[in-house]
Structure formats: structure tokens, C-alpha cells
Length: 331
Image 1: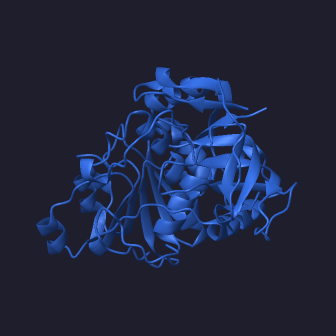
Image 2: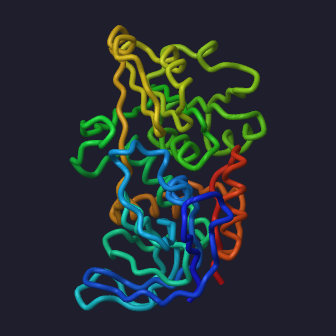
Image 3: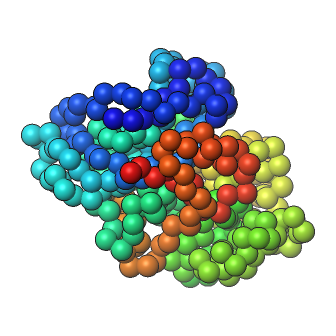
């Protein structure tokens, strides 16, 4: 079969389209013929040698490596102990995460059955492949964590804040993968949603249910928003602390990417800061799939590339300002 591999850490140019053996399945696994693969930040973190992670959290890397976690495809074979799926089932999932052994950039992948759910019938493979990591991240932040594993970044177990009608949720980086699902899930729960992104994404986000839109290139959210109950920050970085000003006393900040907050500043306003490391969950994906089938959730599609064009897909990701998801298609 064909797969994307890299033999050393580096830029998008290290990605190679190569011939490799079809994987064998073990207990609890199925073999999936891949139709599409979602592109996610951990894919390029791995390609770059995981330099974004603190040294003490980096696992050792053994080359060559095949990146990727998010797939949609058709089951070709099942292990004898797998009862929930059969050959021919259409499935989607996020494989072996947290971890970097998903090996999804390939024509076939061995997948833990517990990481998969049936693909929603109303969604094609391309959009289904765009959902798992981004949608599960938003789901585990906002709806249900689904486990009691402490975050490796805080040492604490995240507890989602109940979202009810009247709750105000601000989503920073609202047009990206996690952000556009966070907008939709908060709206589904009845929240008033304020979306922050660049102006070209306004109609996209209003169509997904955003009640208000802030073009960050023209207006700073902290200058015009006060008393939000919850901020989900899908941008992160050194400037994240400025968004504390939009929260009411007792509010909650949910940073998706690495960000630091002054504990004295958050204590003064009784602001909680919590984060997660998203984990694979076939059962949660089944719930997400149900919402996709009902039209309650949509997968925004930024661009698609053939599997052989993984380098170009990573170059697109590096340019930023993504609207929805980047997906690789597998013929």
C-alpha cells in the first residue's frame, strides 16, 4: 500500500509518499481501508520532532514515522474478538490518541475498534475524516470529558461547566477546527455565542450559529465584551491573558493550546483555568455522529489534497487562517 512517511524531523518537505506493507491487525482491532484523513496540529508537531512539547513530556521517536490520527473509511477485516463491527461497515475515528501511533496517512490502517464509530450516513468520508479530533476536543471541553484522567498540563481532572440558555460563551479562533465545533456545541446547548476570528470568516460563523462576531483585526474582544461566563481559546500564545478581561467574576477560561495565566490575577477574579488532552473515544464519536446526521453539527472544509499531496496540505496549514478542516483524500 501507499503511505506517507518521514525519516527525519523537519519541514513539510520531509514527508514522503512511499510503498509500505499493509498493517496486520491485533486483538481488539479492525483493518480500515482509508477513504479520507483529517489533518491536525499533532501531525505537524510530530513531523517537527515534537519541539512544541516540554522536553519532559516528549516521547522518544523512532523513524520512519507515519503521522495522522483521524480517518474515515470502510472496514476490510476484524479481529476475532471484535463484536461491534463487521467487514463493510463505514466508520470514522481518532486513533490511539493521546499518542503518536495513529499511522493514519495511509491507504490502510489498523484501528482499535474502541476508537471508532459508524460514519454518519448523511456525511461523506471527507467531512467525516475532518471531525474526530477537533469535534472530540470541543466535546470533552464543553460537554463531557468522559474519563477521570488528570490533564498532564495541570495535574487536575477537567470538569465541563454546565452550559444552559443564558450562558455567554466567547470562542477565540472560532473559524478553525476546534473553534467552529465549539461554536456549534455551545449554541446547541443554548448559549449566547460570541465568535472571534478575522473578518472573512464572519458569514461562515454566523451560518454555524454565532450570535455575535468580532473581527479581531479591527476590534479587540477585551475592549467590547464583559461578563462572559466561559471563554474557549483556540489560539493560545503569550497574549491569551488579555482575554481574562472579558470574563465575569467566577468565569472559566479554557485554553486549547499552550498558554500561561498569572495565578494571582485569576484568583482576584475567582476565574478557573482548565484544560484537557483530548482522548480517543468511539462512544463520544457516536454521539457526535448522531448530531452530524441530525444537522445539528456541520464540518467546515477548508481544503482537500490527495494523500500524495500531504506536503502541500502541511504547507497550507502553516499559512494559517484556516476555515474548518484540511483533509487528505485517498483513492
